[in-house]
Amino acid sequence: MTLDPILAERLRFLVRVVRKECRHLQATDQRLFAVPFTPRRAAQLDADADLAERVEAFASRYGRLQGTPGDKLLPLTLLALGEKPAAGIDNLDRAERLGLLDSADEWMAMRKIRKQMVHEYIEDMTVLASALRPAHGA
Image (cartoon, rainbow, N blue to C red; front, side, top):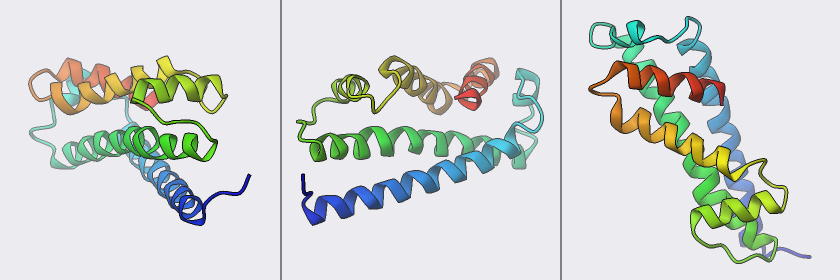
């Protein structure tokens, strides 16, 4: 099968972007989790600007690494394979069936963690710490 040159270039571009996002997330992950991230450490965010910036960078980069592959690269990959892209969860399920993804459920769990980091941590440091630890593991 021959890909349309524009589609092929877009796929190459997105793969480069995702690889770069992975490297950036890994670098931030190493700096943030050099010391275990606990609720007690999370409580220091207001007083420790460097720590707060690392948490923000980690959450942002983790979120981008959910969005770019899931919302952009996956639908385009399915299209290149002759599949019809659909809603996000349907694309994930199809990708799992095609062997492109180990588990759609794990991907959705990682998205849930992203939402916790982005939307719920401001008031509850325990929620933040409990979201960051599995994100670090993922």
